[in-house]
Image (spheres, rainbow, N blue to C red):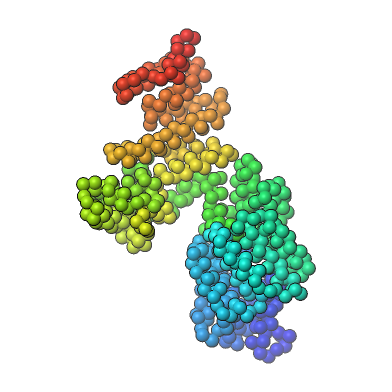
Amino acid sequence: LSKDSPAPLVRAFLALFQVWAEIMGPGHLASAGVLLEPMRQNAEQAQSPSLIVFHAALVAYISFWRGDLSALEIVLADVKPFAEDPHTSPLAVLHYRSAFALLKTLQGAPEEGRRIYCDLLKHPMLEVVSPGLWLQVLGNYLYTVATLSDQKEAERIGALLLARTVPEYNHYYHSYLHFNLAIVSLVRGRPQKALNHAFECRRYGELCESSNVARMSALVIGQALMELDRDEEALDHFRIWLPRWKKAEYWIIAVLGAIEMAYILLRLGRIDPARDALRTARAMVPKNERIATLYRPGDYACRLEEMLFPEQMLAERARKIPITITTLGVFSVTIHGGKTLTDKNWHGSKAKKLLQTIIALGGSRVSTEQLAYMLWPDANGDLAMNAFKVTLSRLRATLAGGDKEIRRNILVVKQKRITLSSRLCSVDAFVFMDFVHRAGIPVLQSDAMAAALEMYGGNFLEASTDYWIISAGKNLRERFIQATLQLCDSLATGRDIERTILLLGRAMEFDPVNEAVCARLMQAHLHLGNRVKSLDIYNKVSRDLERQRGIGPGPMLHHLYLQIQKN
């Protein structure tokens, strides 16, 4: 019919329906792509802005499943003038804006995506369109809600879905409804309900012979099995579906399937296969594109990468972040372009001390009133706050180095609390603590502890005499000592004993009178038969304790010393 029709408008419309049928039924993205070209040509020949926008929305939909965010961005940017044309069908604009909001979420701006979807949900036309469109809009919005981990909003969307009537005869719409309800349940932490809805989605998909539905439901089934701790079953499920998604070019699902497998394998303690699964996921993503994780929190893939490849992620993060602050050892600040700030860049000592104090107090939601009191204790309240504001302005200017975006966002004050942007600034002390916390995962303990110890380049702001900085430094040093002892516990005797001695020796450099470290170091040397070295360590610690604290070794060290003497 499309070939015989003399009207380009008719041919474009027919191609539109053919493409939708191809996507919803067999789900052959390549075949749908072939049909899109004559649709575009006829839409342009007919000079129809509505069909041009519809065409872009379909290309965006296919690009989404292929995980090609660059193509998705380009096609939506190209038709933006047509989408803003007042003659364009509101139906086409709804499709366009839904795709645009989805793109924003995929690009890491879910709050912007949320704002667009909230406006779309208020559109009066959404109340009268076919179930297919509002199911698609709500389904795309659910991706944003899942990225933000917003359980309350997921519950609201679930209520909206249940309030609408889906025609009983339309199995595809019913499958889409159950798919969306499965996502709602997943986000709300109800995996069994999510699994049940996913099974219903699959059943309706079989009734309408939709391969597209089968592929979508398979993802949620695997995710629900994971949340139910049915790890081996979920792993087998993803192993079956991963090659199917690849074959169908549903790369965005295939990537997430590999990510989910990596999480399962990590949870099962199979760290090397988990790393292989993550590498498989990376290999399916175009170079320099971010991994989009459907129906999971926005940092889902990033957290996995940090757990499995901490050193690589640290190097990558350092390369991208414009400001790097070193506090462990000698204090230094390097701003974008590799410039290290010198004393003359600080325009006085107060700006530097303000930054150090913010970091010492945790770097996030630090009370501005507390900062003003600590740094200007002799000034009254108003004078101290004025001095704080002036110094904060100077600090922002110093760190920004002329960059307006960095100056605006590097130190954000909300409700009298200030936060140092982790997006724009990397602080070695915070990275160190992140590795220490990650070491709580048993299978990652050795790697995370080793990475933490590598980060510890010296005691925290060791030149400072301020009590709050000394207190923060003491806490960090204790964490460093604990991490050292834990890593030594995980090392076997024999070939690892020399590494243990190196680790303990380095710990002694930063805390020379720590008796627990001293005792372990003495025992390690005794294990190698080096009695003289053990006694040397004991004698040195005895002298340091007497000089620094006016006391002798504690019972543990003294008992070990007596044992050595006796033998």
